[in-house]
Image 1: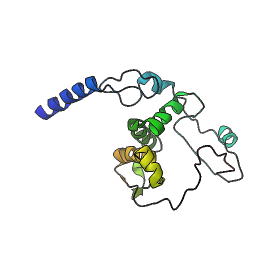
Image 2: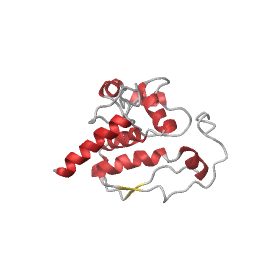
Image 3: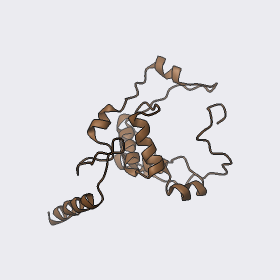
Image 4: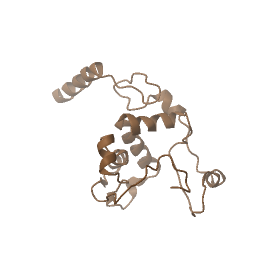
Length: 171
């Protein structure tokens, strides 16, 4: 009981000194909110896995049987702003939240999986960003499912070009 009171008091003080803000609208979060405020979260466009919509979104010649996503990503929408906070502004709580939501939506807790292996990044990129955002999402999945996550099993052999600005065919 004393540890619980001490922990909550410490969170209150830390939140007062370093307030946590919504990754989308920058509104101050309450103590029980994580990464994205309820208003922004409910305004994020949910991806509906409808066959017609899915096939319209795939370009190129690769055969893809199925795919799914948590949210729709469009220029300027709440999903983009949240992901950009994770990617460019070190807002790790977004990645952990998205990982937990993905694990829950796709029912990964019932899978017979030994490890979650996030896409690796180069040492140079890790030094620049400070972390691998895919590992942060994997940690969120791991927290929900209990499946171990590691970013030290796979490695980047070489990456000569930044792929962020490439089209699908160039990538």
